[in-house]
Amino acid sequence: MRQFLKSGFIYEGKLFPTDTGSPQGGAISSLYANMTLDGLEKLIHDKYHRNSKGKIENHYRAKTKVNLVRYADDFIITANTKEIAEELKDIVSQFLENRGLTLSEEKTMITHIDDGFDFLGWTFRKFKGKLIVKPSRNSIKSLIRKCSTIILKEGKASTQSDLIRRLNQIIRGWTNYHKHVVASKAFSYINNTLYLLLQRWAKHRHPNKNQWWRLNKYWHEKDGKPWVFTTDEYTLINLRRINIVRHPKLQISKTPFLDEDYFIKRRLKLLAFVAASNGEEMLEPYERETLTYGS
Image 1 (spheres, helix red, strand yellow):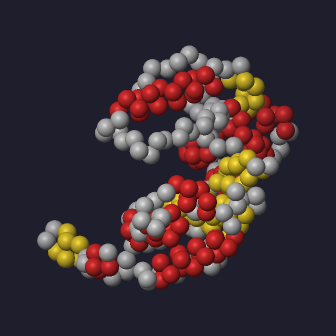
Image 2 (cartoon, rainbow, N blue to C red):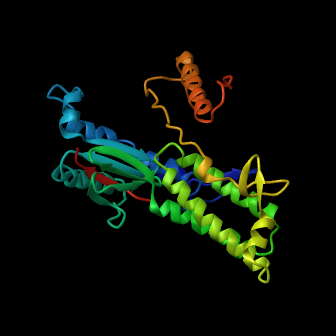
Image 3 (cartoon, rainbow, N blue to C red):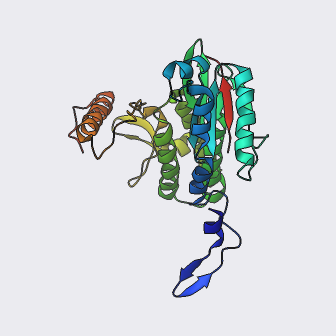
């Protein structure tokens, strides 16, 4: 991989050197991270999951509860006790050191599952023995910050239609990512915050008008729903009306090339659930590393 990074590239018969490397968060950086971390799973299997004959046995996995989940350069490792988690931290540090990397002390933490941890924009935490996955506070704050910038800074002179179009792009992407977890309260909180921000936007545009005048100008009834921030072209997404759709667990041994029937049935089941939650008839098919311990 080092040779590849320094080899340069040829364009129109000319060789261009690559001295600076790829930027952090670039399109290919996740590939670098996966190549670097490949082998960590085998190291954990050899240490905690193999018997004396070299075979992986499930009861070893169940005893220590050591499991690795990684996405690009973010990963978590679960363990049964704090002592095992600390031992795993040393193993990972040595693994990365052999590859010329160091484990970030600022971004690495050992925590109990009852206290929770953040991973990929979600907060994982057990409440009374039940695992609850919710959008993290940082993810919610980041979305509100983006919307606030669009409404109060960049959108001061924007039309209502242009403002709704830009907000919907951000809201749709964020809610599609989070609508599979416990997100109803987060959606409601963001919806209320957007309403207050839009009121400030309307007041800035019409400082000499009263509140009811501004409400009647920008919020209208649509499809039987009152007080909708809408125009003839666009309607702002109401986060309270977004249905939470649980993501069906995928059987990891299945592949679309060999198990086509399984994926067809899975999609039909998902479509049926979405249609039922919307009150419709059945549709036709169409940077932090965390180590956790505890039960």
